[in-house]
Length: 344
Image (tube, rainbow, N blue to C red; front, side, top):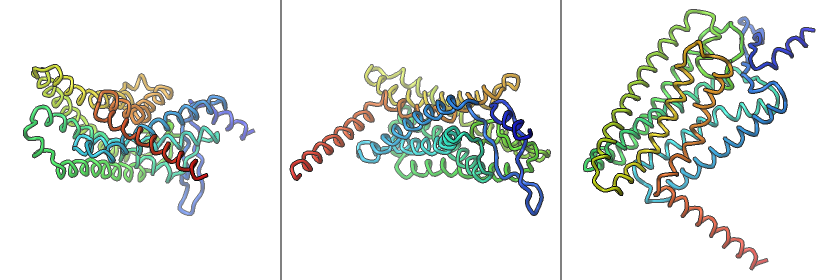
């Protein structure tokens, strides 16, 4: 009877099941967490699997094409495309840290993730997302210098300075993730093991804490929010100056080139920030498991898949490099086919 009761509860995506604990020598400890499923029927679980698989493959293909094009085409060996290369790596990492686990859970009809698997997911997702936000701030600076101070571009954004700034973005993400993950998982958890999200994230883990020590992590998150807001103000200020400079360009071709350089990045920043604000800054009265789930998909899954499309739509240099790369691969495949046919 107890088994049947638990089975009915665990299949509801809106239900928070009781913690499954395993007795150890030092007391009772959580050994796994339960993630929030997208659906409670097998058909919808499989639909979720195939939908996420399509999004994941699109993100892998799009970002891999950008990485390959930038790495192989010497015309794209500039600071702007070097930063775009780093952004594609971060997008691949961030979507790979969350989506495969969710797909596996839907495919195998389970919600479990191990304790250390959850900690690793929190670390890598925080690491990659914070590094991406830092990189987007650096890319805004790159656009500002390129348009507003073009004569100083080589001095302010030389190859060494660009590498240092990219390393700072990766390093800040790593330190942020290390600090917050260690602090979050050092808290005693006694409110169950059901994470109210389809992947492990810090705010959902904090809800399981049973002591007031979680306020320490809340304070760190508040400090992080202030730093993030500072980056946001810097991005907005940069683009105000950029658009003022672009509107002063006399030729229409020059304005078009400047907008082609800036609009993909501005669209990406808007998507990233708006979905993140929807996920974390919405009023508590609007919070619900379904809305939280949708908001998390919008900020964690959609941007890595949409980024390659945003950057390739208006960027003629990148489109030319991709076209040349694809035609070269096609020609190579045809040559290999004819060569194998002649020798058979």
